[in-house]
Image (cartoon, rainbow, N blue to C red; front, top):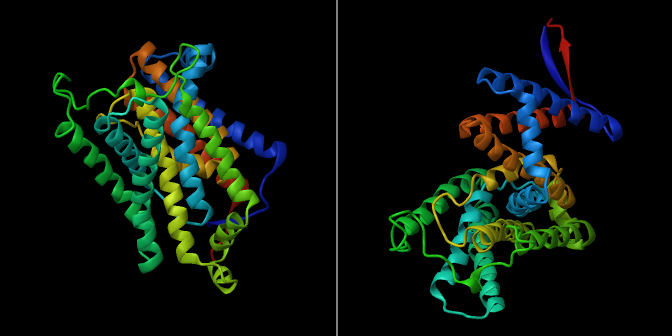
Length: 353
C-alpha cells in the first residue's frame, strides 16, 4: 500500500471555518499537553493569554501594536506571492527600512515633526525597496532564484544593523548596550489614548487599502495576476514581465520597510539589536494563510498579534522560557497550514501492483 495526494474542490463556507476551528483545537490540545509537562494548567494559561491580549483596552492596543508590522510585512510578501515571486526577505527589508529611517532621524536636525517623519518614511521606502530590487533585478535579468537570494540577504541586513549599533552609531551614553541614541521628539510617531498605539497602525491600514485597490481594481493588478498564473501567456499578450518583476519586488520591499520605520518611530525610538522578533518570517505564513489577499492579511495579522501578546503573558505569569512560547506559536501555525492543505487536497491509499 502507498499513499497518493490528490487535488479536490476547495472546501468553502462553514465547512472551511469548521476545518480551521478543528485544527486550532487540535493545536491547543497538543500545546496543553506540553504545558502540563511543565506543571502549567493549560486552561488557566489560555485564559490568561486571551485576557492579556483582548481582555482590556490596554491589552487590545498592545495587540494592535504587534499587528502593525505584521500587516505591513504580510502585505509585502503577499504582493510578491501574487506574481509567484517567493520573497523570503521581508525580515531583512524591515531592517533596511529601519536603517533608512534611523539614517534620517540620527543625522538630520529637523525640528518640524511632519518634515522629519516624511523624510524618515521616504528613506525607509528607498532602502527597503532597493534591498528587494536587487534580487528582483537578478531574477528578471539572469533568472536567479529569488527565494535563495532574498533569504540570504536577510542575514546581511540584520548584521549590517548590528555593525552600526555595536560600532559607529552606538550611543556613548547607552551603558555599552548595542543601541543608538534616542530619536528626537520630532522623529516619533504620535501615540493615542495614553497607550503605545501609534500612527503606524493607521498607516498599515491605509497601505492595506491601497494594495487591495491596486491588486483587485487596476489593470496593473490584473497583469501581475496573469504573469503569476501563466508567464508565457502574459508575454504573448505583450506584458513586460521583467519590468513588472522588478516593480513588484520594489513595492514588496518598500511595504516591509515601512514596518521597520513604524517600529522605530512608533515603538522603540532608537535603532538597536534585534529590533524584530521575527515579524518578517511570520509574514510568510500570514500571506499564505490570507490567500495573498490584502484584507485577509489584516485579519490574519491580528490573530498573530494575539499570539505574540498572549505568548509574552505566558512568559511573565508562568516563567516559561521563550522556547516554550515559540513551540506553542509554532503548533498553532503548523495546524493552520495543515488545515489549509486538507481544504484543497485529500490523501488516498493505492494498492501496489
